[in-house]
Length: 465
Image (cartoon, rainbow, N blue to C red; front, top):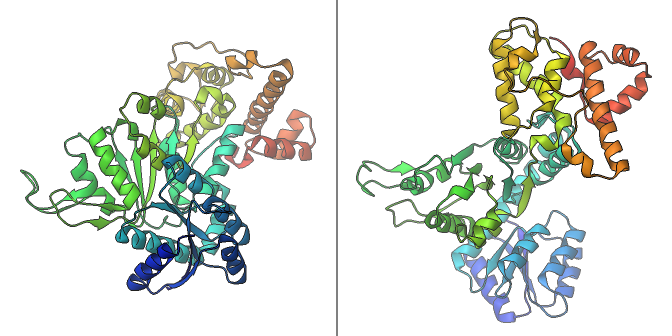
């Protein structure tokens, strides 16, 4: 569907060149303007689908024009052109809402490809307004469990970034749930009807990863008996999730940078360049800045990936989520193993809360799976868990870091922990019946509702089925 484009550049020769290139290749309506202030006036009179602006202009730079355009029409797409900025400056523009940037001197194909992607995105936006609204209201769509303040912030960031095209870098230790974040972003995006393809950069041998990603043509190497479609092609119109990107070797980093930067790739052994229409999400447990210092990871690739960062905390920093997670895994593995296990004993829960969890949520899940397998009754006991240290402290259990906080802050954190863990305990006893739980706790039902909301606890999770 044709759209309208506003091009802003103080160099009139550049305006003429861009207008000619776009008119020759597309049916879009083009308006050019050398004065950014006049451009904003035009934009107020007739909002455009796309603004292409130079970064360095007198009186008003491209970043300021971007910000002012977004104030007029938050949905407008903006492409920044630059011959001066560092990669960091261009990334700053993307963080402030730019769709992409192109560098001068630019390639004709790069300009047209980027514009086509923007217009396709705009069309998807128009067609999926109702879907996005429904997804925004559907809290249960998040494949996460957690009531800790840091997790609530992560949920909100996922909701904000999911409907966009921004590349996301997910960081955090092994077992923190990086792939779950990637799936949440994909499932809440406009590309959710298409595939999310997972590429484990550690598991694929270095000598075959290029073929796996980009595919190959017949005869490209010994054993290439026929053409093979790569994972990039498999993810077309969907999401490509590059897990453990920090383990990717430098030669492949260079090829990946081209894919991210130009939206193009070439199958192994082919002379034909293909365009990639997909969304990129990457994850790593590496400190990529340290890897950059050690010359093992490309700085320009890092900035291309790190447009939006979501950093997952280790489980030991959100221990108030352990009871909720434990019951989730109890239900999951009891169902898988066809066992009627209804509860976790107090001593078992204390022991679970006392663990350090170097393996994070994945370690807790493994412990719970093992416990369910060895449990012979309908209550999971401490002996079923086979933990090294079965003597947990009396709960609520907090981090050791709490002792470095001022008294007021430490007290507030312990109160939050107590509320979360006590409420979950009385809900378990009442099988999710709020009136009964309030009676057990000796508090008003309305007050319990408020505590549930503040702690992010769903009473329905404790109902026995």
